[in-house]
Image (cartoon, rainbow, N blue to C red; front, side, top):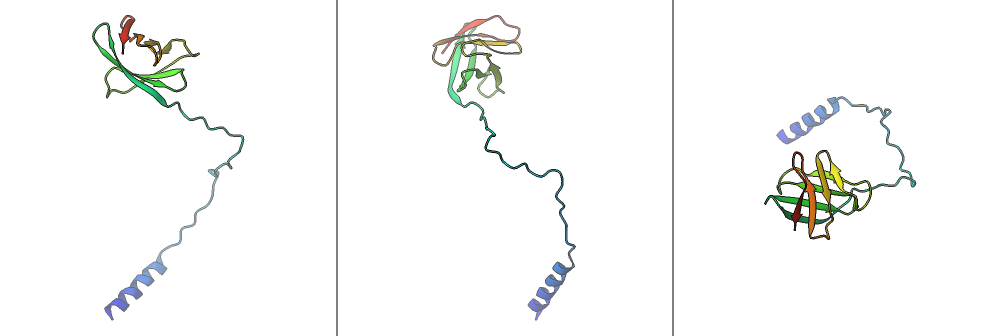
Length: 121
């Protein structure tokens, strides 16, 4: 008998709930077009650690577009994206410059406030 009373009480509570009306606004999704091309970000093709002339270490993630790389002074630090206007040109960011690629055994890097130096893998 108690179970029947609980069921009746629960049913009455559900019926008493207010109904919510959702109105579709201007945020309607745009229909997908076959002409839209999605460009994925470049993937990491190589990650290398280099020892520089001043005995510091730099970590470079070389990216698949051959126009960019991620620089990290320490492995766990936030990367700085370096980019080049054309393949083979120095990759730069504010205060940074990187010359080289994943296939060469050494790179030349300039860090903010420091002179350019050669670093070897």
